[in-house]
Length: 353
Image 1 (cartoon, helix red, strand yellow):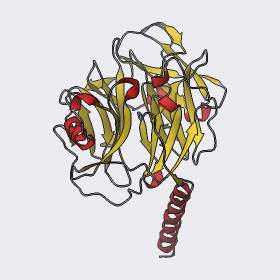
Image 2: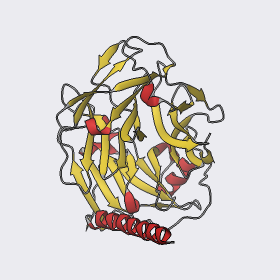
Image 3: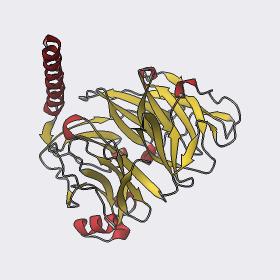
Image 4: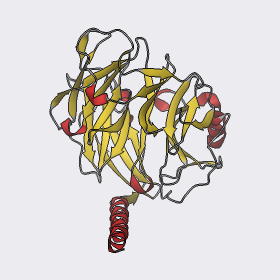
């Protein structure tokens, strides 16, 4: 009984500590009106804090959404999400592009980064969708926020200055291109923001191309613990899958990733998540040419690194999920379901395969 009481007290203490930490992060945000020039990659931190990548301004914004109440159990579905967003914004579907979406783990509601219009004149909008399907534009006037500017973002390929975001253990991980010779960068920036460093230059061996690459950007990535250590699993065009220990990402350093799979030429990875099912871990990877891959992560730490020319389907093995067609974005809703968006603008919720 004493042990049980001690364990209960410890659990309460841990929960209180976590809540206090989330509160401190929210308190670090100051009221104002963030003026986004663009909105592409999204990520969520604790307590409903939304991170927005703004490559046009070479900046990252952290916005306090205040969206922390438990959501309904409705599964997000919308047959014509682009048309619905266009109607909300008073325009046509042809003038709307969805750049990314993420599920807010604090509420289960969805957030979309949207471009209204075409080219450099497109206006960025963040759209919220509650689980019941109602859409609204996220208010960006007099809201809690903070921002950080990337000091060496690519000028020539500005849209790829920020290609992906992920929050983990007090850090925001940012992928993208810099204006340096070793252009491909990964940055691990502490949150609350103080300043952004120049990032870590990353290089990979691309087995299909039979060469080292330093200028190809990470297209999509996620965080995954291997042997108790946080790693990034990152996918590149044509499609090498590479892992980077998070501890290796140090400002100004050059780091070589470990290529653990070659998943096919002429293919662009689009989005990925990690999940567990029946006691095993998987990576779910959406691609523009090779469908949705379910990649087994068993024994990932023992996979022989690819260091010479390699054919497709070398390294980690995968199954193609035939029921998921033309998926362009996806995010985990809970431990058993994933929200998917296809190229036709259909948003659906399906069981994790």
